[in-house]
Image (cartoon, rainbow, N blue to C red; front, side, top):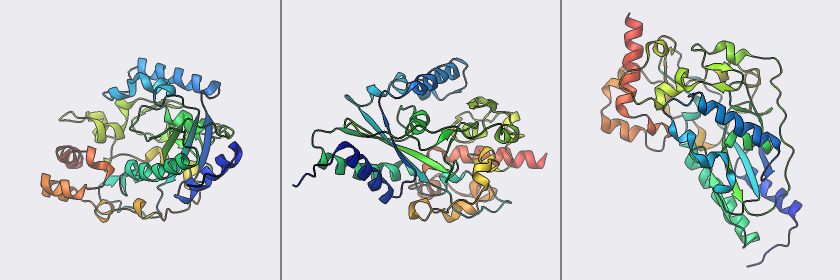
Amino acid sequence: MKINNFNQYQLSKILKEKAKEEGFEPVGIARVPGSSRIKLRTAALERWLEAGNYADMNWMNAPRRKNIETLLEGISSVVAVGLNYYVDKEQNPETMQIARFAWGNDYHKVIERKLKRIGKWLKKERPDCNWKVCVDSTSLLEKAWAEEAGIGWIGKHSNVINSKNGSWIVLGFLLCTEPLTPDEPAKPLCGKCEKCIDACPTNAITEPFVINANKCITYHNIENRNLNLPKEIVDSMGNWIAGCDICQNICPWNTKEIESSKDPEMQPKEWIMNLTNQQIFNWSDEDWKQILVGSTLKRVKPWMWRRNANAIKEKEEN
């Protein structure tokens, strides 16, 4: 096996090119331990947890999230990538609404497959290098490291915003022990705009950059395992059956023209675009099992779909 004698800068440049060939855009690199902003973001996470804003999402309290060095021994660099999931199509407004991130195939698996190919290439070039793939199911302070790597800044709705793709990106990370050339951290460009804060019907964005999951529609219709949803959530959720894009739809960085993803993995499933309330009740548990194959929405169990649909139906009837 021939090993190219790339220097650090060359290796970093080619690594980012490989990532773009996999369909990632933007792509950036950060060095561990990062700048002072990592400490600031970690402190912000601790305040958020202490305030109880994580609702029942206890995994957010994992100690490893506060120290990236526990995820990979000898870690030196972080390759951060964004995968555009915006598709220039609209759901039927009269039907049940599903957040855009879930229209296509399970992005966790899509990102993982792509990043593993890059990691294997890196291992061939640097046999002594160890690497690890992380998506948002890993205990990583992912938005802070995306910002540190320069692929976007954290908006006031707490999503990462890229100047080209807006916040319609899902994040992935390749942690590695190889020293790579870092990019400049991203600079926040939200300015005085607070449209996302004003648009949230449940006031879940309690202050810029702070989301109280206890008030968030997406938390309740995807993560909440209680048999009934809070009345104040139901009163404000409209037809949002799984997820919610209200704060993203209003963002000026998302209302400009954005390139529609051509990645076949990101294309919307037909049932998602025209889902009716009645279908949700008609489908059996086995039907749901088949429908949700390969979808990130598998975490929404059949009884939760029915719970959400029933709440919407009862609200409309009253």
